[in-house]
Image (cartoon, rainbow, N blue to C red; front, side, top):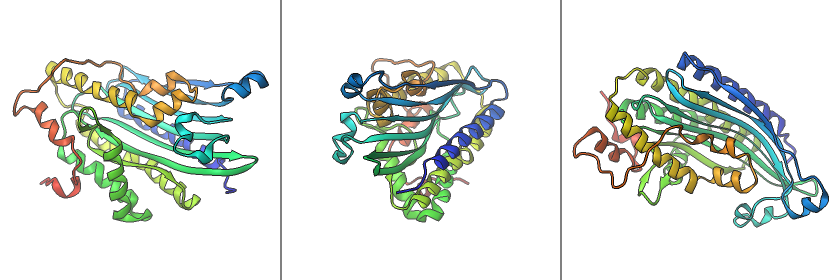
Length: 319
């Protein structure tokens, strides 16, 4: 596989720039602050044999205390190593002893208003080499939506955008497969509920480089098409202190998933990644409450109906 990683890297840095500009405009108050970082390898051959040699760097950008977003984090990373952690090679033994490089953009936005959903998106490319030969490469990514007070129009718009961007890459079959993958991946097993209303998720896409790269770009570009209309519709919705408390309580589920199940978080920490950038997905304010049960027939109780895998495009009827 001779395709260069450079066009992928260039696309990802441009995507980060475009999303930052769009979110700053939507917020209208705060701006992203960039933390550019690098990570150096082991200093000598002895250490290099004993532990992974890590290199690369990235740009972590954080927007805080905005008019719309309490915190918005979006990071670009281009990192590499001379061997993978056991968690990665256990399922892929052909990667044992291979050097690797991974480029990606990942974001999590935590709005202040409980009626505006939290969202996550990620697009990434990975390749591994041994003795100068590529032994594996793939693309991955997706986006998902986590509402606290779901609005059917928003859920439909989100999934229609996801379905439409899949059209050139297998159409309905691609959407159905990656929507199902999203529902299964973002499932909080110990709570028996999904993290939200889903979207798209894919990994290990490695059929045709140009086509797979094109799909990754469609997902990255489609994120703003999916999210910005929801921001415009919900950012000024009035809310109560009780609704804010419920939002903070439900953010706890986000923390639980990211720290217990998220493969990107676990790989980053186990491979010696930069903790501040990896954990930027966590909300700035959150609370847990023992034995919480929402009042019957309340708006808070209604959320449970949206935390199960559903065929949103056929089940939701919006006038």
